Image 1 (tube, rainbow, N blue to C red):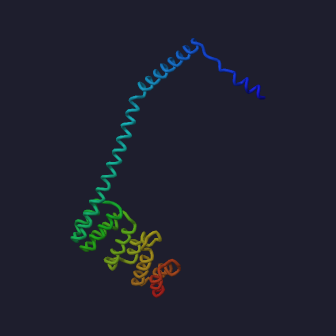
Image 2 (image 1 turned 135 degrees about the vertical axis):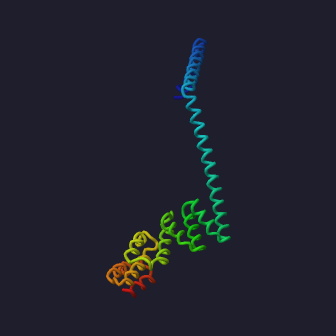
Length: 216
């Protein structure tokens, strides 16, 4: 075994000749030329596309950054205008904010505008065009409180039809309001139908269920 190891140590890797080294260098040079030529061809063919893509990415990124800054600046300006309008109890300014913004902020501004000047037209606008379910239904409940006496029971029931559903935060209040209107109109059967919806619902608020039971 030892002799074999010693013999292996003495074995030397074959040395390349001058011609072989020259041939290797020629291969490397040719290969580099081929690669350079392919690279140049690729650049000539796709260079404009690559530049266009790079510019497009830069434009998109820049646009996003500008959009984010503009969005935050707009939000800050709206908040400042809202605070000023509230401090000055300026219903018109609040209505203007509502019509030029979106979402819950717009609905809150319009509702506060109504609270300041009691202009029912603002409630009508909110009930019709409000962007959030909560404020649309709230506006309708307020309108019923104002105009309910002028409505027939059927008209009131139709007006509150989309409020008297469980997807509305004012579902139980709407059911009770409709029942009370039917009672006032002398239609006990129609009233009981709405009262039973409240009484049979375990999730109904205790105060509203109590009112329903007393009317039943």
